[in-house]
Image (tube, rainbow, N blue to C red):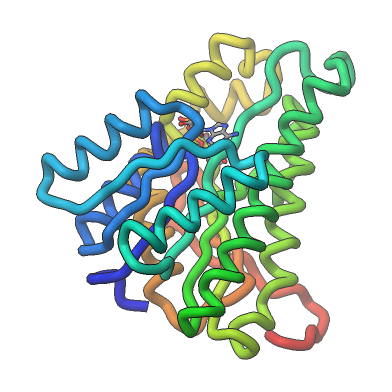
Amino acid sequence: MEIQGKVALVTGAGSGIGRATALRLAREGASVVVADIDEAGGRETMREIEKAGGRAAFVRADVTEEKDVQAMIAFAQETFGGLDILHNNAGILTDQPRFPDAEPERWSRVLEINLRGVILGTQYGIQSMRQHGGGVIVQTASLAGIIGFATDPVYAATKGGVVLFTASLAPLKDAANIRVNCVCPGIVDTPMLHRGQEAGLEEEPRLAAMLRDLPLIPPEEVADAVVELIRDDSLAGRAMLIPNGLPRSLAPQPPVPLPGR
Ligand SMILES: NC(=O)c1ccc[n+]([C@@H]2O[C@H](COP(=O)([O-])OP(=O)(O)OC[C@H]3O[C@@H](n4cnc5c(N)ncnc54)[C@H](O)[C@@H]3O)[C@@H](O)[C@H]2O)c1
């Protein structure tokens, strides 16, 4: 899909990867709805887009609240006339203590934001896009959802869920002209990482070694991958792997025949 002149909505756009994607989509000529639970961060992203000459509007939305998700999509329609591109990006790591020592209410919040939030956004995004002849949805999953993440198993479970949720929606391409794909970054240089480091992420030796030996991924590289998934009209249900220190590539298709692929 050509991005110029389209309407894009990015969740978690007040920081890190979401901010980089929002800025990039605006630079490519989209009108961007910046959605975040953090009003200050979201408004700052909106100002940065406007300062660079782009079009943006901020809406406060908690992706776990169904009414907020409905309202943010209605806001895109009312403000810019529709919704062509949806980037379901908001996500969190589990705070310390993590599974298995975390209270269930603590890790439940990770499921709510990272998995239920993506599913809710996708559901209402599809409903809106269907009315306008189609669109593109890109989820932010993680390499943790492909290879696991010993430091935060619940986080890995949510991201693995997003990868397979996305794969399951591949048939929407032919059924409704809606392509759903996801990005799976390794370790990205964002405030989430720095908060994680303060909370002892590096206690896990494999992760400590990765952080020591491999370059961090700039959030702008994830934005590049999101743009590639939006532009390539052949891709649906796919996961774009973005490993530290290696070029990005599409995850191989599963070695079994699947309908709709
Ligand atoms: N940083 C990494 O190493 C890394 C790696 C792979 C995947 N990811 C994923 O990338 C996405 C963005 O992470 P980031 O690193 O930019 O983190 P970040 O903390 O810098 O940004 C996340 C944003 O999401 C917002 N947010 C949190 N809960 C929300 C909610 N309930 N509703 C709406 N917005 C909410 C936050 O306010 C924040 O602005 C997440 O899904 C994360 O899991 C990050």
